[in-house]
Length: 448
Image (tube, rainbow, N blue to C red; front, top):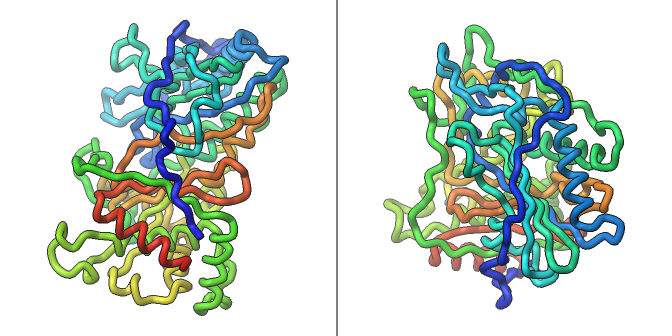
């Protein structure tokens, strides 16, 4: 049965962090001064992403050694990833967002905590205090000169440490960030790059002239050059973590097969069944008192990201270092979602990814050129489940756990991995109290 990670009573609100040192790290060798084009996918992702990677103590790598090795590796990695040491700029002629590759450097902070790593409790639980492990801005720099990346190394009393990384999303998507971490681990071990990054963002430029040949129900139209981000709700939200074990996921797969999905077994993946299941719970959890009209007549639109590297013709290199994900969608009336077989719900989810052909992807990129297209749906399911950040090999070993620093949003549901690596998944949901009660009831009853 699915379980709920209740808030641990010992959840720390203050990690008692002391910043020891803050500096800039520059490329270890001279790099070419140039402007980097940002694709229409990149430019709508102009917001920070915060991740924390926890490591146990290692007798051969005391705090000072790790800090020195990381700082040296970061300096080296800024040569092949020269854009990371640059600054965001608006092109004075076109008004288009781009990166000035000016070797201005990235931030590096060293900090300490009064606690031991084990005192932090359940690392899977989205503790807002983990935000203290992220150095968010360089106080001595102007707003338009802030780095695109800041790394904070925080030492715990036990000798363990956390590596908190802030990056602007224009720099990486999940896959390219994982490759960046693999390369960082290799350089810290005095090895060559694991993968040479492909930095040519023109590969995802719009066509000339742009041609949006599909309706793109997953995108809204905006005429100005600065589309909004997802609106942050002002509602009071409850948040909970629901854990599905590998057994639960197997149950969902069997349910999809038993309800008519055997003819489409290739679509019955772990991601598709979990996404369909979450969509059903979210769509049917709306509070009738907060919306107009019949709850079941409402159309629910799910959004999720699809990697397009292998879907383009010719395919993008796997080493493409920018954002190569587009938004897929599935939509249906809530009445249909409530009544349809689970296999059909899984099929609707899988059709979103299947729809993402070369022509569809190029059309979506062109849509962004014409309409400043921005994702438009009831909610976005953001999956960190299979990115493998905790599989990165550093000289001091793999992380005990890696996770995003989460923020609670009604319009974003987050999937992230379990700490025991048994292929289970944790689902972070933030909803108003009445909707959360309904979501929880739907989730639990489905396995009853």
